[in-house]
Length: 224
Image (tube, rainbow, N blue to C red; front, side):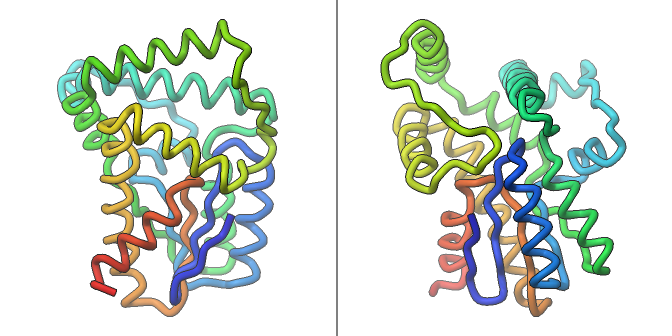
């Protein structure tokens, strides 16, 4: 999915969908932006490029907290498992975007908040109620066939489905949503606003579902 606001083009991707790889390459080649902005921080970008797996030491564990560490490992496991089923490694669309950016001599901007800050905030703000709900929803998902959704992992989910999932997440897990979506969208919007003032065209590659809120946040920053 693609959204355009002034001189900014935002591509919403699925981190394990072949469709996202193709769309990222097509848009960047066609638009030839001055800057390709990625929903990554330096640490995650380095890990993707070098294929080096970061190991969390005692010091890092103290910084991000146990809940943040467990969440990061759980998310990493799920993404890898799903990615393996479709032959795509999580983050391949980001690598493709960086590859094409280098090819067309565009600058690469890393616009996401540091992962350590996000995970630290996750550990600090996630409530026991949300943790119990999360466990409850996982158990229901495993044992209940009711309301199960069939999703094609090779494609980015439809806008309506993404909006419904985000709405449900925001309602059932308000702090989870704030830390992982709202706070990061505000951070990325601020970074993109700065880029938009200094370059004529930017293509940003972010996870599907971030596009609309980022644009609305840029408008708020500018008081549009």
